[in-house]
Length: 221
Image (cartoon, rainbow, N blue to C red; front, side, top):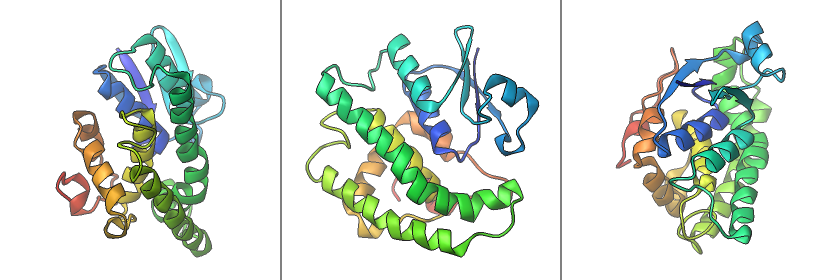
């Protein structure tokens, strides 16, 4: 069986989970306390990070590499377009979320407000929280700009870019940190992604001691 070592509130793990579920691949999920650097994880991935995927007799790490492998070996349904220029745009948007959005927003808001507690690292750094909240608006405005011109984030078809974006926003939504009322285009786009069957397992996630808000699992939020 395919096995994914993950942390439920990691947007990188969530992106991989969405890809696996969209392709209807059965997977065994194993929660991995990666911040403790367990020996088995370090053996599987010397970088000490999740996700780590065991599939086809191999052990893979790094969400971008995993998603590319899934796309090449399980191409149906496709999460990457055939046209090279369109594929480049999907990759650009995935990098936008997994690099800039994560560094400027997710790591500061989810990292400080939730992960510090889970990891036993003390109280949130208010300066980092404020910085993340300030940059959040910039990113949501850019997403709104894109969605005013496209059906989906990277073009006219749903793609891995939408799963990357939704993975990050779902982590923020878990801590009620998305001002949906200010960004109706982003809200409507997220509602479409959230309504997909592949998304349902994510909506069932719960961090012990830190339950999500009521609207988190509501498809008509």
